[in-house]
Length: 265
Image (tube, rainbow, N blue to C red; front, top):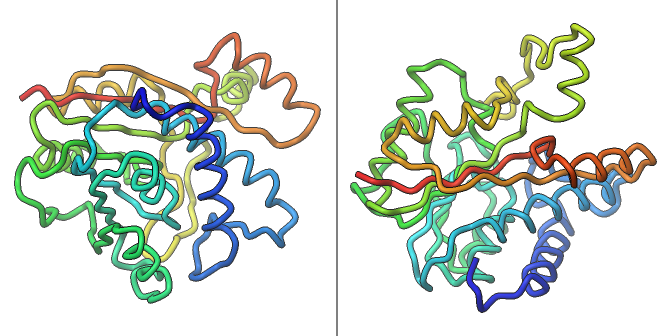
Protein backbone atom coordinates (compact mmCIF):
# COMPACT_ATOMS: atom_id res chain seq x y z
CA UNK A 1 0.00 0.00 0.00
CA UNK A 2 1.34 3.44 -0.89
CA UNK A 3 2.37 5.25 2.27
CA UNK A 4 0.85 8.45 0.84
CA UNK A 5 -2.63 6.89 0.77
CA UNK A 6 -4.18 6.78 4.22
CA UNK A 7 -6.46 4.04 5.52
CA UNK A 8 -9.25 6.58 5.69
CA UNK A 9 -8.89 7.42 2.00
CA UNK A 10 -8.94 3.72 1.13
CA UNK A 11 -11.99 3.15 3.33
CA UNK A 12 -13.97 6.00 1.78
CA UNK A 13 -12.99 5.06 -1.78
CA UNK A 14 -13.96 1.42 -1.29
CA UNK A 15 -17.37 2.48 0.05
CA UNK A 16 -17.83 4.89 -2.84
CA UNK A 17 -16.97 2.32 -5.51
CA UNK A 18 -19.13 -0.45 -4.03
CA UNK A 19 -22.14 1.89 -3.76
CA UNK A 20 -21.60 3.25 -7.25
CA UNK A 21 -21.16 -0.08 -9.07
CA UNK A 22 -23.93 -1.86 -7.17
CA UNK A 23 -26.43 0.95 -7.74
CA UNK A 24 -27.95 -0.75 -10.76
CA UNK A 25 -27.67 -4.08 -12.52
CA UNK A 26 -26.31 -3.52 -16.01
CA UNK A 27 -25.85 -7.23 -16.84
CA UNK A 28 -26.58 -10.60 -15.31
CA UNK A 29 -23.99 -11.46 -12.68
CA UNK A 30 -24.68 -14.17 -10.08
CA UNK A 31 -23.12 -12.44 -7.06
CA UNK A 32 -24.39 -8.89 -7.59
CA UNK A 33 -26.93 -7.61 -5.11
CA UNK A 34 -28.53 -4.23 -5.74
CA UNK A 35 -29.66 -1.76 -3.01
CA UNK A 36 -33.32 -2.68 -3.47
CA UNK A 37 -32.71 -6.25 -2.29
CA UNK A 38 -33.11 -7.32 1.35
CA UNK A 39 -29.64 -8.84 1.62
CA UNK A 40 -27.86 -5.72 0.31
CA UNK A 41 -26.68 -4.50 3.73
CA UNK A 42 -25.05 -7.86 4.49
CA UNK A 43 -23.45 -8.15 1.05
CA UNK A 44 -22.20 -4.56 1.21
CA UNK A 45 -20.55 -5.23 4.58
CA UNK A 46 -18.92 -8.41 3.25
CA UNK A 47 -17.66 -6.72 0.07
CA UNK A 48 -16.38 -3.72 2.00
CA UNK A 49 -14.40 -5.89 4.38
CA UNK A 50 -12.85 -7.90 1.56
CA UNK A 51 -11.85 -5.00 -0.70
CA UNK A 52 -10.74 -2.68 2.08
CA UNK A 53 -8.43 -5.37 3.40
CA UNK A 54 -7.19 -6.22 -0.10
CA UNK A 55 -6.33 -2.64 -1.00
CA UNK A 56 -4.26 -2.36 2.19
CA UNK A 57 -2.63 -5.74 1.55
CA UNK A 58 -1.31 -4.89 -1.93
CA UNK A 59 2.44 -4.14 -2.26
CA UNK A 60 3.60 -0.60 -2.88
CA UNK A 61 4.35 0.14 -6.54
CA UNK A 62 4.83 3.23 -8.65
CA UNK A 63 2.10 5.09 -10.52
CA UNK A 64 1.39 3.72 -14.02
CA UNK A 65 2.58 0.25 -13.05
CA UNK A 66 1.12 -2.40 -15.36
CA UNK A 67 -1.46 -4.49 -13.50
CA UNK A 68 -3.58 -7.41 -14.68
CA UNK A 69 -6.74 -8.43 -12.84
CA UNK A 70 -8.05 -11.92 -13.68
CA UNK A 71 -11.84 -12.06 -13.44
CA UNK A 72 -13.49 -8.67 -13.86
CA UNK A 73 -16.82 -9.33 -12.15
CA UNK A 74 -18.67 -6.03 -11.91
CA UNK A 75 -15.42 -4.09 -11.79
CA UNK A 76 -14.75 -3.39 -8.10
CA UNK A 77 -11.04 -4.25 -8.04
CA UNK A 78 -10.17 -2.74 -11.42
CA UNK A 79 -11.85 0.59 -10.56
CA UNK A 80 -10.25 0.70 -7.10
CA UNK A 81 -6.79 0.11 -8.60
CA UNK A 82 -7.29 3.03 -10.96
CA UNK A 83 -8.78 5.49 -8.49
CA UNK A 84 -6.51 4.73 -5.56
CA UNK A 85 -3.16 4.00 -7.19
CA UNK A 86 -3.39 5.25 -10.81
CA UNK A 87 -2.10 1.97 -12.21
CA UNK A 88 -2.46 1.01 -15.86
CA UNK A 89 -5.11 -1.67 -15.41
CA UNK A 90 -6.03 -4.50 -17.74
CA UNK A 91 -8.78 -6.86 -16.63
CA UNK A 92 -9.75 -10.11 -18.32
CA UNK A 93 -13.07 -11.93 -18.16
CA UNK A 94 -14.31 -15.28 -19.45
CA UNK A 95 -15.73 -15.04 -23.02
CA UNK A 96 -19.13 -16.32 -21.88
CA UNK A 97 -19.78 -13.36 -19.55
CA UNK A 98 -22.60 -10.97 -20.44
CA UNK A 99 -20.48 -8.03 -19.27
CA UNK A 100 -18.32 -8.29 -22.41
CA UNK A 101 -21.40 -7.69 -24.56
CA UNK A 102 -22.82 -4.88 -22.43
CA UNK A 103 -21.96 -1.51 -23.94
CA UNK A 104 -22.93 0.41 -20.79
CA UNK A 105 -20.49 -1.61 -18.70
CA UNK A 106 -17.68 -1.47 -21.28
CA UNK A 107 -18.14 2.29 -21.73
CA UNK A 108 -17.98 2.74 -17.96
CA UNK A 109 -14.68 0.85 -17.81
CA UNK A 110 -13.30 2.93 -20.69
CA UNK A 111 -14.15 6.12 -18.80
CA UNK A 112 -12.04 4.77 -15.93
CA UNK A 113 -9.23 4.06 -18.45
CA UNK A 114 -9.50 0.33 -17.77
CA UNK A 115 -8.73 -2.10 -20.59
CA UNK A 116 -11.26 -4.99 -20.59
CA UNK A 117 -10.37 -8.09 -22.57
CA UNK A 118 -12.01 -11.44 -23.25
CA UNK A 119 -9.82 -14.37 -22.23
CA UNK A 120 -10.12 -17.96 -21.06
CA UNK A 121 -7.33 -18.65 -18.57
CA UNK A 122 -7.37 -22.31 -19.54
CA UNK A 123 -5.75 -21.20 -22.79
CA UNK A 124 -2.57 -19.29 -23.54
CA UNK A 125 -3.07 -15.59 -22.76
CA UNK A 126 -2.38 -13.08 -25.52
CA UNK A 127 0.23 -11.08 -23.62
CA UNK A 128 3.99 -11.08 -24.21
CA UNK A 129 6.34 -12.53 -21.61
CA UNK A 130 6.93 -10.24 -18.64
CA UNK A 131 4.12 -7.78 -19.41
CA UNK A 132 2.86 -7.03 -15.91
CA UNK A 133 4.27 -5.65 -12.67
CA UNK A 134 1.43 -7.24 -10.70
CA UNK A 135 -1.26 -9.84 -11.34
CA UNK A 136 -4.31 -10.07 -9.07
CA UNK A 137 -5.94 -13.51 -9.18
CA UNK A 138 -8.90 -12.79 -6.92
CA UNK A 139 -11.68 -15.30 -6.18
CA UNK A 140 -10.87 -17.39 -9.26
CA UNK A 141 -8.90 -20.47 -8.26
CA UNK A 142 -11.86 -21.98 -6.41
CA UNK A 143 -13.76 -22.08 -9.72
CA UNK A 144 -11.08 -24.13 -11.52
CA UNK A 145 -11.10 -27.91 -11.78
CA UNK A 146 -8.66 -28.83 -8.98
CA UNK A 147 -6.36 -31.09 -10.97
CA UNK A 148 -2.57 -30.71 -10.83
CA UNK A 149 -2.43 -30.32 -14.60
CA UNK A 150 -4.87 -27.42 -14.76
CA UNK A 151 -3.58 -25.58 -11.68
CA UNK A 152 0.03 -25.89 -12.85
CA UNK A 153 -0.86 -24.79 -16.39
CA UNK A 154 -2.78 -21.69 -15.22
CA UNK A 155 -0.14 -20.52 -12.74
CA UNK A 156 2.75 -21.17 -15.13
CA UNK A 157 0.99 -18.93 -17.64
CA UNK A 158 0.53 -16.21 -15.02
CA UNK A 159 4.22 -16.50 -14.17
CA UNK A 160 5.13 -16.20 -17.85
CA UNK A 161 3.43 -12.81 -18.26
CA UNK A 162 4.67 -11.50 -14.89
CA UNK A 163 7.92 -9.53 -14.83
CA UNK A 164 10.85 -10.62 -12.71
CA UNK A 165 10.33 -9.21 -9.19
CA UNK A 166 6.69 -8.69 -10.12
CA UNK A 167 3.91 -9.45 -7.64
CA UNK A 168 1.29 -12.21 -7.79
CA UNK A 169 -1.67 -11.74 -5.43
CA UNK A 170 -4.10 -14.62 -4.89
CA UNK A 171 -7.30 -14.29 -2.87
CA UNK A 172 -9.75 -17.13 -2.28
CA UNK A 173 -12.14 -18.46 0.36
CA UNK A 174 -10.36 -20.03 3.33
CA UNK A 175 -11.06 -23.67 4.17
CA UNK A 176 -9.71 -23.08 7.68
CA UNK A 177 -12.63 -21.08 9.08
CA UNK A 178 -13.99 -21.86 12.52
CA UNK A 179 -17.12 -23.29 10.86
CA UNK A 180 -15.04 -25.68 8.75
CA UNK A 181 -13.07 -26.83 11.78
CA UNK A 182 -16.27 -27.50 13.73
CA UNK A 183 -17.69 -29.50 10.82
CA UNK A 184 -14.50 -31.56 10.72
CA UNK A 185 -14.71 -32.32 14.44
CA UNK A 186 -18.32 -33.45 13.96
CA UNK A 187 -17.33 -35.72 11.09
CA UNK A 188 -19.12 -33.60 8.50
CA UNK A 189 -17.43 -32.90 5.18
CA UNK A 190 -15.68 -29.53 5.12
CA UNK A 191 -16.62 -29.24 1.47
CA UNK A 192 -19.33 -31.56 0.11
CA UNK A 193 -18.78 -33.10 -3.31
CA UNK A 194 -19.35 -30.20 -5.73
CA UNK A 195 -22.43 -30.99 -7.77
CA UNK A 196 -22.30 -27.38 -8.85
CA UNK A 197 -24.41 -25.08 -10.94
CA UNK A 198 -22.82 -23.26 -13.83
CA UNK A 199 -22.37 -19.51 -14.15
CA UNK A 200 -22.44 -18.95 -17.91
CA UNK A 201 -19.78 -21.44 -19.05
CA UNK A 202 -17.83 -21.46 -15.79
CA UNK A 203 -18.28 -23.43 -12.57
CA UNK A 204 -19.27 -22.27 -9.14
CA UNK A 205 -16.90 -23.24 -6.28
CA UNK A 206 -15.24 -26.58 -7.01
CA UNK A 207 -12.50 -26.58 -4.35
CA UNK A 208 -11.77 -24.51 -1.24
CA UNK A 209 -8.08 -24.28 -0.28
CA UNK A 210 -5.96 -23.92 2.82
CA UNK A 211 -3.37 -21.16 3.04
CA UNK A 212 -0.59 -23.78 2.91
CA UNK A 213 -1.94 -25.10 -0.40
CA UNK A 214 -2.07 -21.63 -1.96
CA UNK A 215 1.48 -20.92 -0.77
CA UNK A 216 2.70 -24.15 -2.40
CA UNK A 217 0.92 -23.33 -5.65
CA UNK A 218 2.53 -19.88 -5.74
CA UNK A 219 5.95 -21.28 -4.89
CA UNK A 220 5.54 -23.80 -7.70
CA UNK A 221 5.55 -21.04 -10.35
CA UNK A 222 8.90 -19.39 -9.50
CA UNK A 223 7.42 -17.05 -6.90
CA UNK A 224 8.45 -16.54 -3.29
CA UNK A 225 5.68 -15.98 -0.77
CA UNK A 226 6.06 -12.57 0.88
CA UNK A 227 3.06 -12.38 3.21
CA UNK A 228 -0.38 -13.74 4.04
CA UNK A 229 -3.50 -11.88 5.14
CA UNK A 230 -7.14 -12.61 5.96
CA UNK A 231 -10.50 -10.90 5.82
CA UNK A 232 -13.75 -11.84 7.52
CA UNK A 233 -17.38 -11.18 6.83
CA UNK A 234 -20.32 -10.01 8.86
CA UNK A 235 -23.92 -11.17 8.66
CA UNK A 236 -25.32 -8.63 11.08
CA UNK A 237 -26.32 -11.35 13.53
CA UNK A 238 -25.51 -11.95 17.17
CA UNK A 239 -23.35 -14.91 16.13
CA UNK A 240 -21.01 -12.40 14.50
CA UNK A 241 -19.79 -11.36 17.94
CA UNK A 242 -18.20 -14.80 18.26
CA UNK A 243 -16.70 -14.47 14.78
CA UNK A 244 -15.31 -10.98 15.42
CA UNK A 245 -13.72 -12.03 18.71
CA UNK A 246 -12.36 -15.29 17.30
CA UNK A 247 -10.87 -13.69 14.17
CA UNK A 248 -9.26 -10.91 16.18
CA UNK A 249 -7.41 -13.54 18.23
CA UNK A 250 -6.88 -16.05 15.41
CA UNK A 251 -6.81 -14.22 12.05
CA UNK A 252 -6.31 -17.54 10.23
CA UNK A 253 -10.00 -18.31 10.94
CA UNK A 254 -10.95 -15.51 8.52
CA UNK A 255 -13.40 -16.34 5.73
CA UNK A 256 -11.09 -15.17 2.95
CA UNK A 257 -7.31 -15.38 2.54
CA UNK A 258 -4.83 -13.20 0.64
CA UNK A 259 -1.38 -14.44 -0.37
CA UNK A 260 1.34 -12.29 -1.97
CA UNK A 261 4.14 -13.83 -4.01
CA UNK A 262 7.11 -12.22 -5.77
CA UNK A 263 8.55 -13.69 -8.98
CA UNK A 264 12.22 -14.55 -8.53
CA UNK A 265 13.25 -15.99 -11.92
